[in-house]
Image 1 (cartoon, rainbow, N blue to C red):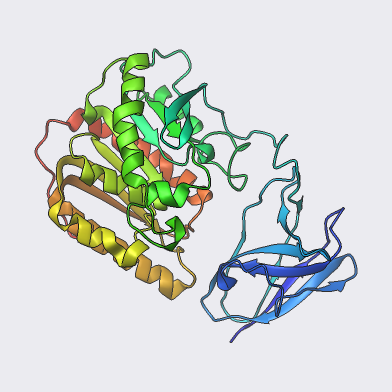
Image 2: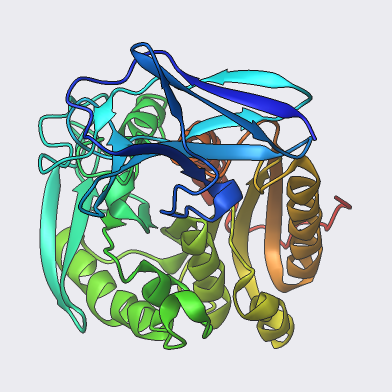
Length: 373
């Protein structure tokens, strides 16, 4: 196997005392430093390892403190930082620049690179209070605008509340399209540690075999949509879109097939359809939503290896083929060099928006043909 040297040029100020080690996808994000400990070298540190050729690495540095507490690298504001990414092709040296460590600040004070929502609503929900982050173009009357409901709402606007300091820049993308004559309103739903329960409709280990997706989708239909109608006026379902990534892509596709006629367009980004041994594929056999357009995409670096990513791409092609007879249209995109992260979804989001909004003028057309992938 290729020899890989991980080099930290300089440890950040205030690095906690303890054992510096590497974790990541290749280790299931283990907090055990055994076998993956850096040796200190001047102001930095070095780790030598062997990894399979073609491995797709997403890694982070952690410290195991003497009291057993584990601290993970972060950004300059004490928040989460994106993983370091690399493709292993033969012997290589990877430089890991560390900005800081996660701490009690949790990213507070992190400067915004992307626009925040215009307004935040709080609605009652079975799981407590649900935050709804709203955006529409400056100077536009929001009433009657096409509406996009987005999952993982904490990740789609400004960076401050995001999971790892990266956002979709949804407002920036939508603002640019509004300037081109394609305005829309976005309602983004934040989620907490219950994400796997709320977004996965099938029982599996990450939702403790107790899925809550149907409860979540019922709430969207019975509470969120009426609240949006009351605030912004009624809107045809054909002008309402639902979108999300990963498990958010899974719940988006499930919702569109579960409730045909409620959403005119589905944005299914990098759907994680593996739960319960790909139960979605069996569940959808008897479902259809003939009036619905589906954006389906996947990066070709989504997996733990190039071979695994190629298999994921093949599964996505198969999903598209299964969907085409069931819906009005499937727009399939395989994005070269894209990983399973916010940076990739941010890059693809503007194309989805344009495809959705331009397609609204074609709502009366007959179903599109089913070209081969």
